[in-house]
Length: 547
Image (cartoon, rainbow, N blue to C red; front, side, top):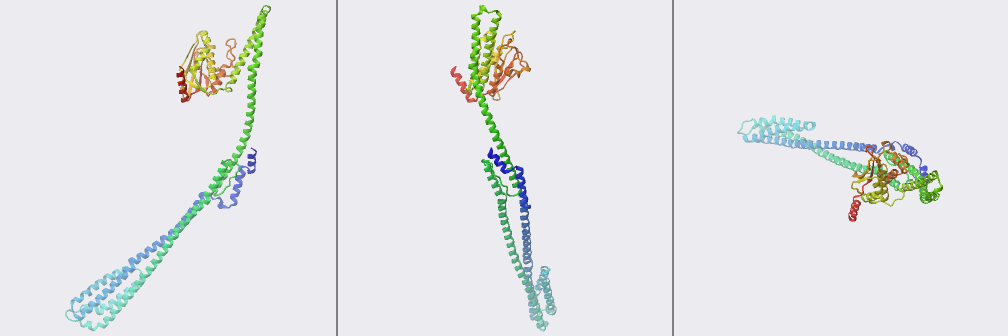
């Protein structure tokens, strides 16, 4: 106890530890006041913000990659192919017109006419594909102007000449037509170069965007990995390690080291939990110190009680030997005096001698009853299976003279075997039956019955008679030692019998009470614990063998 008190005074009160811990928390700054939930919330929000930025960048690069890819697939490449087809259409027109002008054969006009249709289709498609590209659109318009110049000066006049003979206009304008068509081809080459440049630029942009996309996705993966590592490290440092230290401290205290302090660490809620556990430990130290003090007091009281019991046993020994011997001498010498000097004593002297002898006998009986009462629970031979059927037979046999003199009828139900002290249970039955015989009604013969039934693990017994009965107002008083309801002249006794029965029943773990509703007579009910099945079967086998 002294050690625990020293530990307690060294540690200080729970309020002091709590206030000290709170002051330490304030000194660590505002972040030290963050709870685990707040740290997790902040960490998740920061991670989500970083991931949102990276996701936005990823979405942007994907959208840009898609736009450039669509422009390359659906714009630059088809436009370049269509410009080549347009140039081919002009070449077909020039070849057909020139061949028709030299020969006048109508078959040469077929390439010319198909070239016109190809030109129309190609121009319409190019206008759609080049929508928004001002440079390429200007090149296309320039090429169409030069093509119109060649058409007006050479193509249409030659194609409209009569067939069958060479066209003189073709020979006359051959040089001029060649120059005009060369101008068309130059414009077509310029348009194709511009479209090819746009396609190459789109390829380069697509490559750059793909590189950016790869970097961004790699960065996202790296950030996710870093966040995972940070989460595990943060949980380990902020939650797992403080909980581990707390568990270790608690285990050390649980093993008996109550003076070991529990240090607070980690987030604010874990520190508050640690402070509460530390306060609980301090309270336990206080309670243990008080328990040690109370145990010392109990040990002292137990020692005093043992000494008192030893003195009581010594008193019982003295009462059973030293006190009874003088009483026997008093009674013996009084009776001897009465016999020897009977002719010299008058009636009053003989009466005085009778009073003295009766008082000595009653004192001896009272001492024996008190000894029997004090032995219950103190002198105990141990619990063993007791066959109440056999014990009841022995009891009624011991009381056979009183039963015959009162012409009593004693009956009983089939009685079980119970666990208890056979001597004390015999005293219980003898007191209950002798009380029923003693307090009989003068106008009828006694009828005594012992009933037995088993319910809820207990045997319920009841001794019923048809005697004078016990009033309901005395139902508790009759079980108090020396409490008599009648004078000693009317009914002899010392008022110990039912008190002794109550002590025996309660010592065996049962209860005893008066049934106030039973008339006429009295009914005393008591309970005894049932014998375990194995012991009951063993007792039954023993009874069958003996019978």
